[in-house]
Image (cartoon, rainbow, N blue to C red; front, top):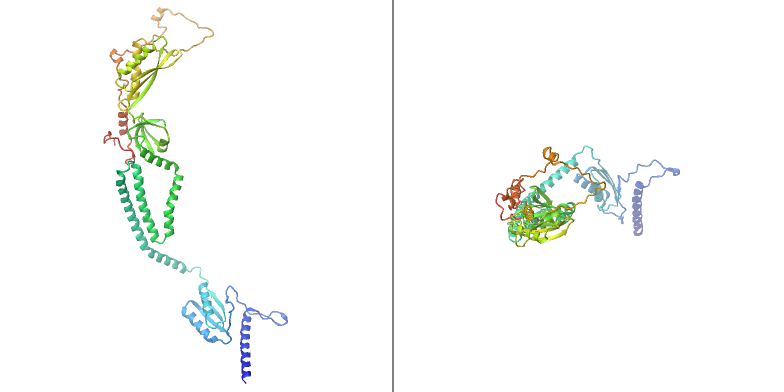
Length: 489
């Protein structure tokens, strides 16, 4: 009897296993009608709607949990969540069939995982359908707005902290800039270099404040990018604004080297004038015609520069021709005596009169003399010396002939004699007119009224500068000359 009972139980177990396999085949293989023709099959479930779990690695022959218990358990969990619309659970031989509606693919997958993890579940057929949202469903937009509002509320403390830190860093940066200027005032003479270093210190403080704000806000990568990208930004700006950068750097070098000061008479790029201002872009001159001339600092730094004020003494020269019949040494002594007696000509270095060349009809003498460019105008002194040398040559009978020109007349020259009476009465030939003679006392004057004194034009230029349009205050990188009055500043 024991042998028969054992065989019966074994047959029953095999029958149950075959029944389970048969039920699985019903949902996967359509039934065949007689004579091999397909009968009207049941409508299969689409894989896009139905989710079938993989076959289990091990199936218990004698499950502990019955199908009714599995159904009640899964059905109760789905209804408790309230995530599904009309959930239905059916279990046959450990195979769970899920039906109903869900709002998202995540919930559908969650229900399938729940059934799959339930005790003694062999397989899961997930037929839960997804609810298509309406085109007029504003719940996602409302949810997005609510999320944005919550993020704004959460970020409000960071915004307040950022504004406070930024304002504090700006104040500290300004104070650091002023402190750096005070510290560098007695250590660095260049005003522009002082401003660059002081502003660099203030900018570094503000940059540290910006880095702290980004770091606290959780934007560490952005903070590192800002700090590391400042050098790259500076390089890009330098390449894009090459000329502006050249002028800026040239202004730094000029303010450090100081080849001229305010009020110096200089010649730059063919322009001669008195320096009025050196700013971060240009050097401003008041030329001898009373016009303001702006020269880019890069051109000033790269071109030849002549400063006539650096040394007060200046040498001038001119050339005069005497006849071949005149004694050269006598003419030299006459010219030297005129130079020695002139009040604006310096005796140290002493003037000189040298023979320059032998012309076609004259012996050319070149006269050199020195004057003080701070107190006298080289144009006026040169005019005065030329006038006095010519007068002295005339008094001593030194001729100053014009250059000879040879003119050839191949057909001869027709000559007509004119009666002197006709010339006197009828005026056939215009008489040569002579200008009104200057009084004898003014012929040898050092300075005539036409020369308007021998003083330097610097006084006139300064007066013109006061009447010119005022320059930008605080832009001059050069110190004001000690002799300049307050009105000129």
